[in-house]
Length: 234
Image 1 (tube, rainbow, N blue to C red):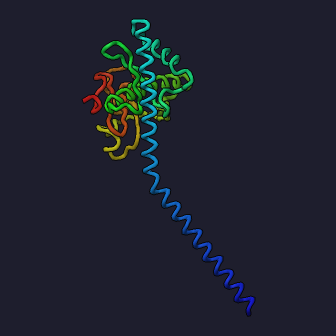
Image 2 (image 1 turned 45 degrees about the vertical axis):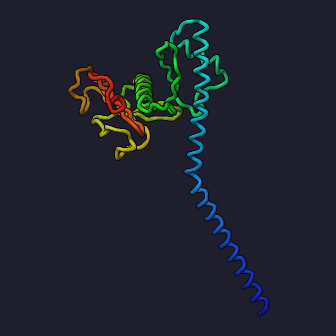
Image 3 (image 1 turned 90 degrees about the vertical axis):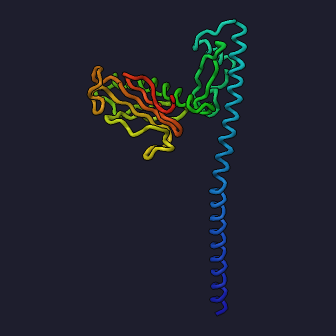
């Protein structure tokens, strides 16, 4: 009888211990979930500050190069200058943001980050234009490999993979994805002359005649007969 009571007490203590462990694990999980938004905010702020410092270094290098040579040169020359100023870095932006070079009023190129530029509309416009360039290159490569038109092409923009889908019907996108139902994050689509909504486009069948890019904030649309439009341009 005494042995039975001792065994019962042992199992009871074991059960209590397991309950305590489970409660501690649940508390730890809750603390992690509570801390995640704060950590994400801290990480984003740290990445933005690091990018600002890197852009300042790049900008200073371009200014020094300009006054050394007294000429702005080409975009290619500016990129070579950046390679010399920051030779050990694969990406100027530590977060992998695509860097664009825009000539300023004083003819000196200014580096702009596709992830952290504070001019949000400009950021959307630059990324949209670059995405279309990369999409065209990827589409041409895919066509050389196969006679069948691809349903989508993949590119890398701002250090992230982006799949650009071919559509026959224009997507219901007028604004950024954060305020548009059915879309999240960064999206892009393209249309070809002779297909669906683009059947009557005055261009050779298979020609890219429509491209749309949207991030969380704004949207940019390109049409063969109208160029770039969208709320990123207004």
